[in-house]
Length: 164
Image (cartoon, rainbow, N blue to C red; front, side, top):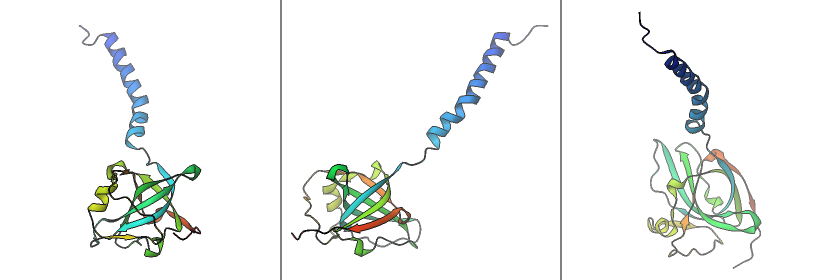
C-alpha cells in the first residue's frame, strides 16, 4: 500500500497550522479591533452653523469653527463636529463665547476635513461668538475635523479678554 501524503508535506502542514494559530489572532485583533485614539483638546468656539431640522432617527451634527489651543501658546483653526442623538443635549448657546475655553475628549476624523471657504459658503447662516476674531473667508485653509459627543465634554474656564 502506498502512502498518499509524503511525510515532509505533513510536517509542513503542521508547521503552517501552528504559525497561523499563534500569530493570526494577534494580527487580526490589531487591525480589526483597534480602539479609537481620543485626545484632549481645548477650544474657543468662533462660530456655529445654524442647524436645519433635527432627526429623531440616528445622530444629528452641529458644526463649529473653533480655535484649538496648542502647546506653547499656539493655536489653529479646526472644525468641531458635535454629534448627538435627539434626546441628548446640544452645546448650549451660552458656550458660544470666545472668552470661554472648553475642553473635550475628541476623535480626529480626516473624513470630515474641509476648507474654511467651503465650510462657510455651504451655509449662509452662521452664528458668531461674542468677541470672536474675524475669519478670512477667502482663505483656502483646510480645517482638521474633530468629532465630539455630549459625553466628551470635560469642562470650561473663562478668560479675561481685552476689548477690541
